Length: 119
Image (cartoon, rainbow, N blue to C red; front, side, top):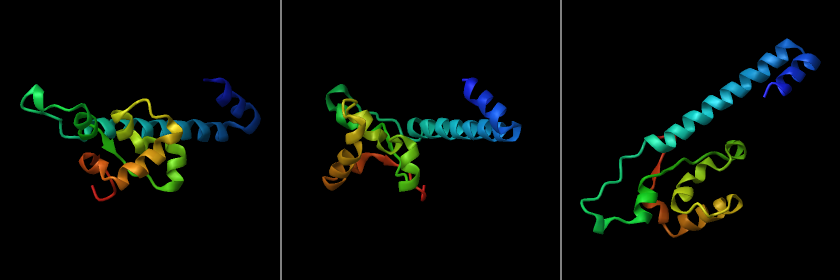
């Protein structure tokens, strides 16, 4: 963890190393905030009895969909597909985008809590 910042310090100077560490810190803060947002902005999924519970409903109503613009999506590592992860963790990362598109066409995500700029 210290090797890369130390090499940046030695070869590029202290100002560049400080900018490097500050950039990593800001990226970490944004990552933690996004993770927190995905797990805390939902209303809890509650059902009156166990017979009316559904694992699909729990996965979709207990997760969050965060639409991310194309340039940012490259760096988000699939955070915009978190609702699919809650539905089925076996979907590989390289198929998440396609799964999201197909689910949108079938209106599967209507019960998913979507957080966007309006909210």
